[in-house]
Length: 267
Image (cartoon, rainbow, N blue to C red; front, side):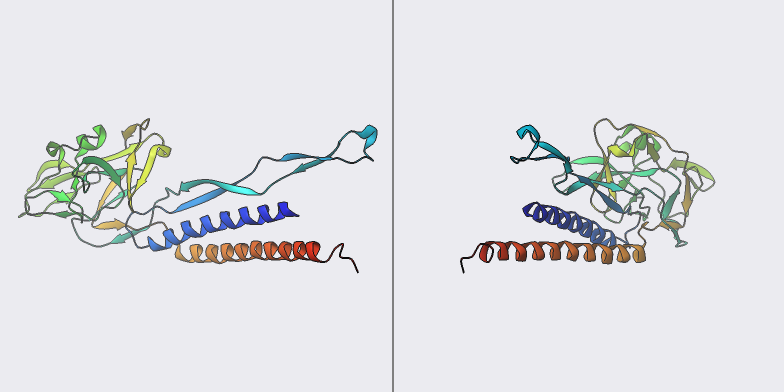
């Protein structure tokens, strides 16, 4: 009976973890390039149960079968499917159609600079002509993206006083001349990508970058791949499962209370 308490408790922990992830997905449903997350659950290893009683054959423990002590949190995974495109007609907005990421030269609050990767192409051209994110991080060219080099020499720069266009390969054309290329890179294994912030990623040790065959779209933005209705339905399901586990604990607690206080009471 006590085992049932642990089973219900672990079930509640699983549902709480799922609820946290669903809440984060909904909070970022309007974040450009955000990729929704999900979670898995794993069962604890089954234990062999024995019958230990004097009536057992030859006084040997009799195998009754396997019992399980509940579930535990598995892993959190990312859904890398592409989000819907929103047409903005802003020439500074870019989106990637296919597998790949933009590369950024990102500087944290400690002044440390590193390469981050994102699907959010809401860029702008600053006064110096550099293509930057809304937070001022520099967009890297193809060389910087492929080699993971966040140096200033790999920043994308154009003439801020003249119009420009970006073709499907990411080449920037201004005054009928190709002046640079927006870096787009892909990876052999996305398991080596670690989430950083809302919609950026780090490439951890062991990860390898490869050339991307995706195309670049100008004047559009990729939205998140979160389906708000689906996430809300899942939240209701999780809430009901959590409440069901609560009722199990309440029921077992009530049964244990009666067993302790009533069973065997001397009349």
